[in-house]
Image: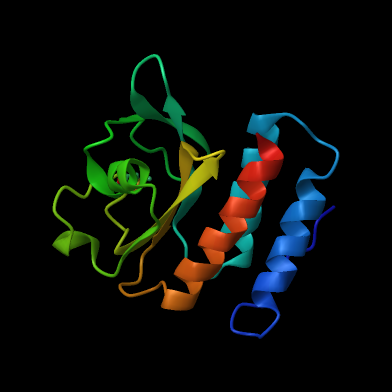
Length: 161
Ligand code: SME
């Protein structure tokens, strides 16, 4: 049984998050299982999220396809030139959106979403997919969140792929 206590705002939040996620995936090679547990852990450990999950690059179809997530059902396929997820994929960069309504081409899967953070999963220079975090609060994600999630996903991508 898991007890998830959010330490968000405390100085050791990100070191703890990293440790917790590393222990969740320790010894497990199955990608879907690992992504499912990571999306769940983030959803519960990071306050004010209405969606936390992954879109994975599908080489055959040349688009992102919905992967494991927590939250309401979401759009299944995203072209690389669409939405915040497509932009993060194409640029291989983390994108922080303070107000989704001001982002041209934002895809509204859940009308509750007000701000968003999308982080690419990069392995050997190739973007394998993205982590997408949505919040019902505008300006939810800070520069530190952007930096720390980028670092964390770089590390995780190396281990899960
Ligand atoms: N808002 C995203 C689409 C995915 S959902 O938020 C889960 C985007 O604009 O790419």
